[in-house]
Image 1 (cartoon, one colour):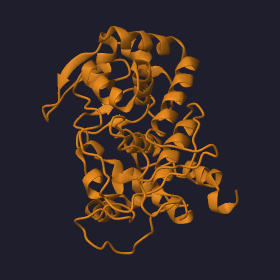
Image 2 (tube, one colour):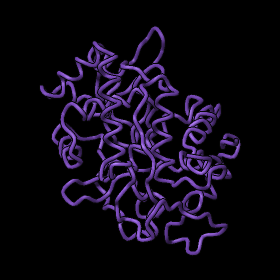
Image 3 (tube, helix red, strand yellow):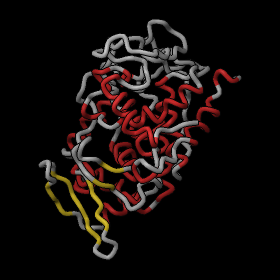
Length: 323
């Protein structure tokens, strides 16, 4: 394939930036997984809109959606990789980053194919409200995921990504980690859901979540209302129990569901070339880099949105990834 399309080299450089001692739990991995998931989770099967093709978070309407709060960190972490491999589209970079991060953190190898294009303007961005609200229950989860064409088993499998990372009250409104080691992919999330007693608490910001406090280790873990809903719904719970008892089955199902997620809305021919007409310029179009944004009110193809990039760079320069 040659250097121009050397996804393996890109993947290695993504792996090289995961260690971030000054960031959450010392790793950029979890936030890169969230970036990949949020870039793809906007897909609507009925209208065939949204999804990972296009990299819509480069534009203000999607990039500053409250549901995407904090993902500017992930985008900044990946900028040195983009600079080293300017040919790769943001749509491919973001989804590949999630796949690489999962594997590097001990998770399964996830099938991934490149070829996504970047939107040339913001005219085809999906509306807000398509991503899950952690404060809600089982019906909400089905409404969100069924819209994408995903079933109960896939909903629970993808929820297992909560083995990674933590919530921040200044982003999602929730606070804390789900598991003891939030940078290691495992099935502990499911085991803890079933084995610990989860009590409801109200944070200072008024948001309700569930917690378990271990006095011996002085460790507090959390669960979202949507997490607890998985144990209260009969159909969801059977998969929670399955994955809690069978790590290999969870890894197998998660890999299949995540691969499907990042392909939603993408049509390929026999050679796996993307046939989507979302990009009016056609072909494998990677957004050009710009030294200065033309208009701060609009999204740009720059490193991050102008509304977030400058203060973020100033505050986080100490741990910004470099190759």
